[in-house]
Image (tube, rainbow, N blue to C red; front, side, top):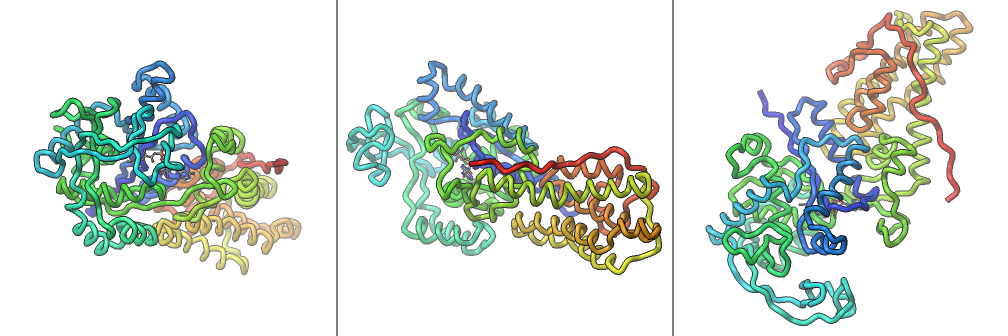
Length: 511
Ligand code: MSP
């Protein structure tokens, strides 16, 4: 049998008590893709987690008078709670402080050192003594430390370096010969022209000026610095270089790393070179998505446009937030977020198009047939068009999902619900009822319910709660993908009596 595995990852997040709606974006997309692949029979592994080392965390912990581990232990719960409230179903939440990760990073570092890909040198930079931080010329603000605004001075520090430059040519060859590796294609061009072709410099991979990091086993003054620690999570999570590497054997290479555009560089330059040095296959694809912005600008606590995403989830429900993130932003580009846009989407698509359709149809079934689903041989002139559209939607969705065009995939599912609403207008069931045209009315209601069932099954990866609730209200046991290949699988003589509106319209707020 064909090996249908799918390994998908999000970046590991910096632990924070202030996650905003933008942070939810990568994770909701990854969750929907993971669910989509599962629905299609893939053996899926979905990894997310947290990136817990570094000077910033060490400082925050010092400010609070706790150890860095105590600090991260506390804030990490915030991420887990947020993912739970969004219905994120990951297979592992890896923390870079997990013992197994720490050991694997130490082994990777040693292996690269032993084979000569890591060497000891000295790091030259501009040093801010109070902040204990090195900066490059371009990071300075008005010639001063970007963190505290004080003077910086040239300094050097003993450090280990990874031979990134050695892999430059192989990397360019790989990227050119694997057009699917960096997506969207604009990001590929940016990487090659702006970063790789001008020349890769060896990368500083250890520090001695702070202690909150993974110790280098053979040189206790040093801790592993940022990217080797963070990027290795994608393989340490699977047990690479451990006694039980069965998951690694099964799932590596990753099928998809989804990352925000600002970290595409690390995932498509540093990460592939580390993997080449380890003699491991490269991930199939790195997709760099755009940012969610507010009024064209960054979402941030200091700008005062930050709200805890749970406030929106509590007010509109998790599926409304998932829907907004998946539907509103063209995947790969930046997209706006505002509560007004969220309410518009919610009212138009969720409350009107789907919610109202389901409720209206089930109410008619109750009114005209006491809630019993029946079908008849009598057709209407509008059936064929409806059925064709419904039956062809699955393959449309597949084509879009292949290209990660998630908003288009979702829209084509909503096309089913829009078409159903039109079918109601065309067939005017209330007139059929008046005319005592019961057979035609049975057909119309059956076709509507069957179309809704198929639409709901297609919706499950994106809006799992909504889809399950629709299928529950339909009282059907036909919930799998193989029940939507043909139109007409919905059971007849089933009694429906337990239903309520799934989405209630919300009033616009004064900004
Ligand atoms: N720790 C690193 C990643 C290491 S991966 C080996 C990191 N963490 S982060 O917490 O700053 O960001 C996590 C993810 O959230 C990134 O993909 C980032 O692009 C995404 N987003 C943060 N703000 C965002 C928006 N406003 N909009 C969309 N995504 C955003 O980077």
